[in-house]
Structures are given as structure tokens and as C-alpha cells.
Amino acid sequence: MKILPANPTHAADIARLIISAMTDDCCQFLVGPGHTLDDFHNTMLRLVLMDDSQYSWRNAFVAVDDEASPDDLEHAPVAGAIVGYDGKDLHRLRRRFQEAAMADWQMDYSNMDDETAEGEFYLDSLAVYPHYRKRGIASQLLNRFISHAASLGLPAALLVDKGNPSAERLYTSMGFEYCNDATWGGHAMRHLVHPLK
Image (tube, rainbow, N blue to C red):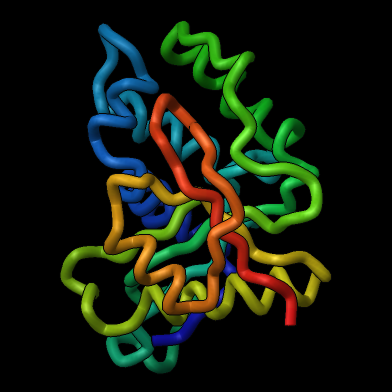
């Protein structure tokens, strides 16, 4: 596997992977009654293709299968993706999601809780396609994310659902440390930070 900065050709995969990281129940809750997961996917794909969305391809790294396409990594199959951004940019980047949610689903998310803040590089989404799991790809993506955050002088940070101990074990095995309890989207979360070395 090779970990590369994403480009617009990866947008469809990034959108699908973000949705898989969020779970169908979460996506259906966000899109609201009268709309479908297909509606959510269509909106998410538009957000990934934007330059100034929290889900933008510009905020992503992808793991590509270099064995499948060793001579054309730009078009190699995508195995997984990680998306994140500087916490100080949350409100500016989230505005695109709020605008799209209102226009596409008539859902008002202008008062969403903040999941990050200035002083950290926030890991928004991490997912690997099922047929590529158990190969260490999530760890490779995390390593790239952590080193990218450090190159910007920021600790990597994330929220993990208290009901997902296996994900928390992965993060702590990669050096993330418990910071505090948090709540986001009505879920009890743990705020983890990877300290700068």
C-alpha cells in the first residue's frame, strides 16, 4: 500500500469511506426523515469535491493498492482514506456542510456542537474498505496523519465513541492518549490526543 495525498479522482471513494466511518444510522439521522442514504451520499460527494469543506479531498490522504496498479498510483484502487483539518478552521469548513444540509435536506445544523478547536489537527474520518481490512492499512493512514499534523506543529486529535472500544484500542496503540470526556451528536465520546514529540 502507498499513502498519498488525495486528488479529485479519489472523491467518490472518499465520500463512500466517510459514510462507512459514520455508519448508516448516523447518516440517516443527519439527512432526516423523507430523505435516503443515497441523498446523503450525493451531498457528501459534492462536499468532498469542494475545496473549502471539512470533507474536501484537499483534507484527505488515501491508501492505494500499489500491487494492483504499480505503474499508475494516481488511478490505483483506493483501499482506505483518512480526513482531517486544523481545528481552528472548523467553523469556516463546516459552513459548507451546513449550507448543503439546509439546501438538500432542509435540516438546520447551525448550532452543532464543536468536535475540535484551535490547537489540534482533528481526525474527522478514517475508514478502510472491508476487503482491505486486517492488513494494517488504518495504522499506515494514522501514521501519515500524525506526521502531517506534527509537520504543522499540531498534535493529532480525535473523538472516539465510548461504545467503540476496538477503535479506541487502535488509537491508543498508535500513541493517542486520553484527554477528556466529550459529547458529540448526542453520543458519549472520549477526546484523544497524540502528543507532539
